[in-house]
Amino acid sequence: MDFRVDPNHGHVPVMRDRMADLLAPAVEEFGAGAVIVDATLGAGGHTEHFLRRFPEASVIGVDRDPAALRDASERLAPFGDRFVGVQARFDDIGNAIRDREGTIFDAARTHGVAGALFDLGVSSMQLDQEERGFAYKVDAPLDMRMDRTTTLTAADVLNTYSHGELARILKTYGDERFAGKIASHILKEREKAPFERSGRLVELLYQAIPAATRRTGGHPAKRTFQALRIEVNGELDALRAVIPVITDLLGPGGRVVFMSYQSLEDKIVKTALTSLATSTTPTGLPMDLPGTAAKFRSITQGAEKASEAEIEQNSRAAPVRVRGIEKLRTDNP
Image (cartoon, rainbow, N blue to C red; front, side, top):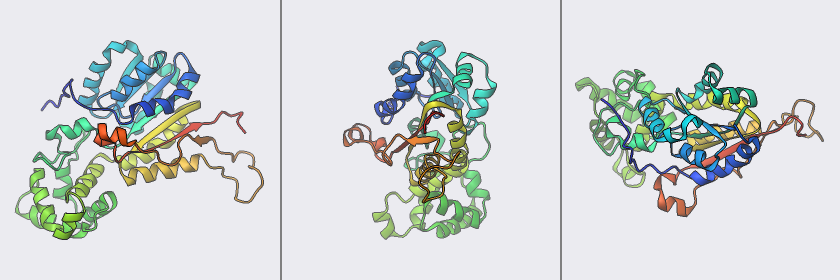
């Protein structure tokens, strides 16, 4: 099936202006030929804004979903060779920049990346494509793959994982209180017939989760669907892997910004960025020992949130948490 993106898709990039503001000092200092990496291209909304806001910059847009990449590339075609799309998992960005030929990639290798954006989680256009199985409010095939060239689906997880494996991912990736109980229900139900569609899973979750919790804890399927999506796509492993890669690719003064939509992502980002922006000199010494000074500085005060005005215009901005760092110059004390 061809999962094309409607060119009139109503995707509104979350905190579009703020993301550009955070990257602006680096992009403007790099000047002509500055390279921005949009590591989660999606519908291309952030990239389009960057290309308009920074007329001397170019963007490498990365997305693992070939349908998304194709449609975003069509949207961005008017910008000519200032945009190059790459189909890859974002944790493979290092190889993508190292191995490809072209002016943009040459500039990224020679001068370093000026700015990078990671808009984490499933994209709104994927949520809106019912056939993908990401949304629990419609009955759809239990797929949940961001890249449909991969093999593992949510149905595979439900139909083949052991009780212990299911309980682990529901608890770890979904913070689901009733992980063990849900896993037991899944094993019992799949003996009757394999899971194929989301509607059957939602019905099971209504049965497995106590009524009192359903009344106060939001939609009973939310946590399970999040856990399955993260497992199918290896999202958290990819996030952990890419942080040292992208920070190494930044040029001096370059900036990277992460947009997280749930606590597991934000915890990984917070821990990694805090470590990078902290001296490794033992506590208590009056100055940094040679080679231990922080090589990055934070460019956000804790985790920034969307304004009430933005949330009113775009409800998908409500859970976002934004963190960013800047690579310090070697002559910076």
